[in-house]
Amino acid sequence: MNRKTLVNGKTLVNGKTLMNGKTLVKRKEPMQNNGLVKRGFFSKVKKYRVLLLMLLPAVIYTIIFCYLPMSGIILAFKDFNYRDGIFGSPFSGFENFEFFFQSGQALKVTKNTVLYNLVFIVMNTFFQLTVAILLTEVKSQRFKKTAHSFMFLPYFISWVVVSSICYDLLSPDYGLVNRFFVFLGLEKVDFYNNSFFWPFILVFFNVWKNIGYGSVMYLAAITGIDTSLYEAAEIDGANVFQRIFRITIPALRPTLIVLTLLALGGVFKGNFEMFYNLVGSNGLLYDTTDVIDTFTFRALMQSNDFGMSAASAFYQSILCFVTILIANFAVKKYDRDYSLF
Image (cartoon, rainbow, N blue to C red; front, side, top):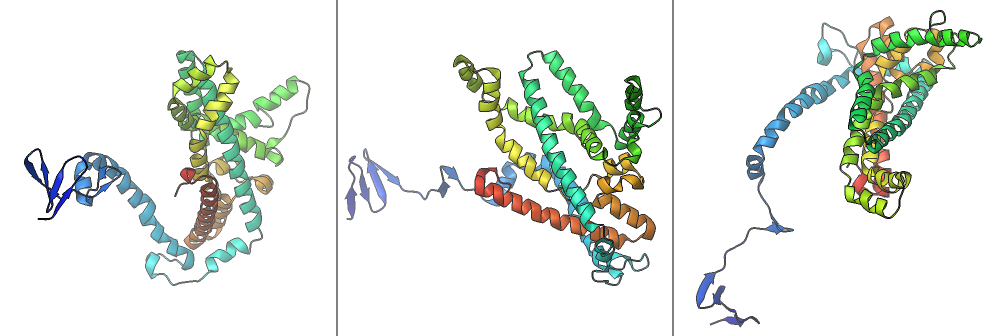
């Protein structure tokens, strides 16, 4: 009989373990990975069926409104007409891209779009992070909730209303800003005929409208920081600024990097609602306010060609895709845990 005697006195006999006079037959254990039993796909679906059902509406919405419309990108390479439809219209090659690249405005509007979005990302991140940290340090819960509610309110105001507010502030005749200038004995400024001021105006209204909503993400991340770190720092004599720069900001780094990467995914897409409603069709401001979306819209108003719109969207999507790949690659080189994929 083939026997193997172990150090602790147990004897293994042909695959059977003898222990205290009892015979235990070895059974095949399921494969384990770090102590967790591997389960099949359907068993996992059954186990998490409630969570998957809760996720199902979002998945259906994404498929219908995000993935299915992607088939329309074929319009960028077709001479669309209503009789033949999207898939029946004849191919036109790259003719739909010619209006954009041969207009002489492609470089200017692309540069404006990228620069505006980069400034928006930097300014929004700075002010949203600052507001979240300041609200966290406020001890009065009533003041904290009231202040955040007032900052959150502009997010729900449409850009049409914001454009009216902007005109009431900057109107050359009745604007509040020009009235204040007259009160101080200064000359009025015709904002709507001077393109120099509009990069600052657009950045201001973008930050004002998004500061409350964006700060929610950072407030949620701050609440997840272990409070014992702050208590230990306070016992060691750290003041409020040292706690912010040594604990809060380093702990927010993963959230900050992920949100920045997501924002970079749209760096070549202009906020059409903002630019169109605030600037409108004022040709005097196009040099500093024209972006890809508004330029394409004006071209479509003249030609009514859907292929031109699809070509512009395809151009933006490709650039955004390349940008997010490069940014994610750079973050992965810095720290793989902070990358999106």
